[in-house]
Amino acid sequence: MADFYDTLLPCQSPRVTVIGAGNVGRTLAQRIAEKNLADVVLLDIVGGLPQGIALDLMAAGGIEQHDSEIIGTNDYAMTAGSDIVVITAGLARKPGMSRDDLMAVNAKIVHEAARNSLKYSPDAIFLVITNPLDVMTYLTWKATDLPPQRVMGMAGVLDSSRLQTFIAMELGVSTADVQAMVLGGHGDLMLPLPRYCTVSGVPITELMDAATIERLVERTRDGGAEIVRLLQTGGAYYAPAASACLMVEAILRDRSRLLPAAAYLDGQYGLRDLYLGVPCRLGCRGIESILEVRLTDAEQQDLHVSAASVRENVKIAIDSLTVAGAR
Ligand SMILES: NC(=O)c1ccc[n+]([C@@H]2O[C@H](COP(=O)([O-])OP(=O)(O)OC[C@H]3O[C@@H](n4cnc5c(N)ncnc54)[C@H](O)[C@@H]3O)[C@@H](O)[C@H]2O)c1
Ligand SMILES: O=C(O)C[C@H](O)C(=O)O
Image (tube, helix red, strand yellow):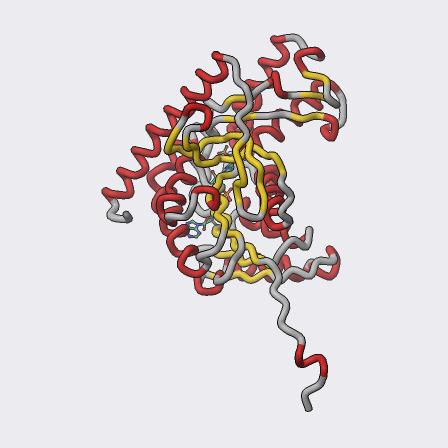
């Protein structure tokens, strides 16, 4: 006999698909679940891998007190109806490699992942993590043909967080009191901006000499490679997953967070038709706006040098897809 409760409409939890169940993907899935942000679909090309990780994460639910459902799959149909698709699939670099060395292989993987995900989640916002980051984000935008506000890349949060950590370590203060900003492409030409780094509102230029600041800036630029050299088998994943989770939360909870993200530029900073790290306001519609902070002539020039390198690599990546017949 039907009763009152049968008339209730089904609830729809937010759903985040994470493509790639490797180090970054699985750690991100864990963070999203443990923060009770959304259900997670974890997809990988390797049979059994995402299913095993998902089951393991679900088994921690009672201890971590999360109610998220985590599904592991090799089938894109299972990702249907996702609010956010995060692309982490692809190769990670080994010692001695640059992120750009991953270009041709990852271009094909990311292009396919974007196309397949869009088929089942046409309303999703896409967050790209695979390297080389700015190039892969551009390819995702091209592959999906979505409004550019709905495609973005994660790197600036990570690079800024590294600089924040190094400043806190140097001064012996809590990271909670440090704000840092890194713009530009996610590579050796990234643009840490000491003028916009503060400790409880005090510019770091008041707290450290120029040589110390330069040392921390260099360590930030080398931050990913330093970990690759230490691990020997791949790259960082705890801080990258935490950074991506912050962006996912900003979108799902419509928090209007001002965070550096790889965003499509259409004249901002004097640049066009390019994804590059700039300060963005993130909310439920994706990149709600781009903040144009004032740069000195030297900073503006450095940003354009970083942009030129990304632009060059976009051309190489698109050519590699054309040769492979993927476009
Ligand atoms: N943007 C950033 O700041 C940042 C930070 C960390 C890592 N990364 C990049 O993220 C990527 C992943 O890093 P990781 O450490 O997780 O690597 P990983 O090797 O641990 O995981 C990659 C996963 O992708 C899967 N995969 C490969 N091809 C696939 C396909 N066609 N479809 C679905 N899955 C596929 C692999 O099976 C593997 O499980 C790398 O390119 C790395 O350089 C970027
Ligand atoms: O350095 C890498 O290869 C991974 C990532 O881009 C990072 O900065 O940690």
